[in-house]
Image (cartoon, rainbow, N blue to C red; front, side, top):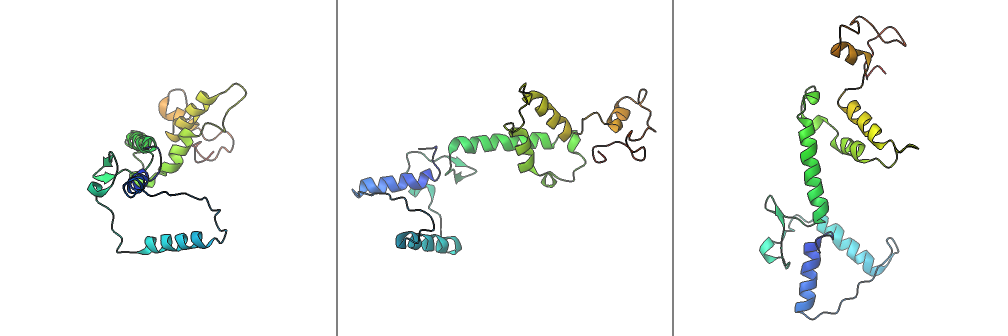
Length: 180
């Protein structure tokens, strides 16, 4: 039950069906098929989205065996996805407070959806020798500005890399990630 979206609504519907001894048959109607009943449901849904008088049902009135809440709000989505999203948010917040991100004025300046996508999307980056770990390491180094550009090497080991050296390709600008 907790794996389905809108499980509180579905649980309430099931309870009402049992209490009132209703026999309900759900019929899948293709979208945009100009079915009269589907058009009626679409119109009701559009009205519900713009209705300012629509009130939410208090948790005590929901007909569910248990109601999971987060910050006093009922969780009405797949509970495993919800928990994963909470832990992802916590991990990204931990990442945001690293010194590498001090240059950002606030965490709202960071595109968190893109950051999460880059960390989690391993499917398209598989080499013949399955180099996922190497590519993941590359992405993390890129994100944290830890790739060995000349500027980074000059900062880490100024005794080996002369601070006056410029980009070896153009010989006009310092070699930074932005310049590459």
